[in-house]
Amino acid sequence: MTFTDAIAKAMNDQLILIAFPFFILMLVVEYALDKRRNHGLYEKKDMWTSLSMVPITLIVDILPKALAFVAIVWLHEANWLGLRDVIGRQWWAWGLLFFADDLTYYIMHRGNHEVRLLWAGHIPHHSSQYLNYGTALRQGVGERVHKYLFWLWLPIVGFDAIMIFIMISLNLIYQYWTHTELVRRMPKWFEFIFNTASHHRVHHASNPRYLDRNHAGVLIIWDRLFGTFSEEKDFDPPKYGLVRNIESHNPAYVVSHEYAAIWRDVRATKKWSHKLKYIFGPPGWSPDGSRQTSKQIRTTVGGSS
Image (cartoon, rainbow, N blue to C red; front, side, top):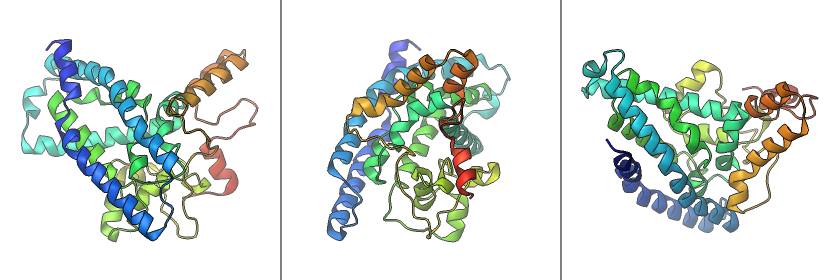
């Protein structure tokens, strides 16, 4: 496979192309319902900021996705563990891949919240103070640079590139519907197993008890297993956005402001240990404790799950 072929494949994500009109339809329906019921789910400047970031994300995504495609093809062909021909594309292999992909997404997404450099790439998705289907389209732009690295273990254990990228797309498509306030609760069994609108409202909230909770893609069971689950509480309705919200609707600022903040912090200290912690430590870390991480905020305010 040539690099040109890889770029062509990266730009030709049929599943996302098919799903995108439905994304827009759901956004229009939600917007119309919001106007009729006057729930205040949308704000025009915020919505246009979200929509303007769609082409930016798509453009930035091309090169990392193409490089990842090439790397995954190469790792699959290398067949280091001899599992390529065992896995194949049997029905059960797709089942295994579903769980492997979803666990990988959980790890990647949790890392985006717990490592500041990764958070800088993911923060645009959380920068809106509204939760709606426009916010769902406000993806992390810088996140595209590192995202696919987390999936490089899958071709080593035998899954091929087409299977992997199909599953990545299906996972992303599933998550779209969870970005809403109009869907309140699903049946209890569904809420226990799957990521839902209720669980994802928690994820987008800045309330102390909800910070860095519910990183699920499709299955909420990973959060339950690894201690990052929090239930949405009626007595503590989610407040969306960041601990310290930004007031700009400029897409360039939304995309870059946390990288700039990291750079300022790194330049302001002379200790290399502090520089590294500012980059790879948790968001909110500071050497003098003048700022707080999500974990510290949850502990201090009593915001437990």
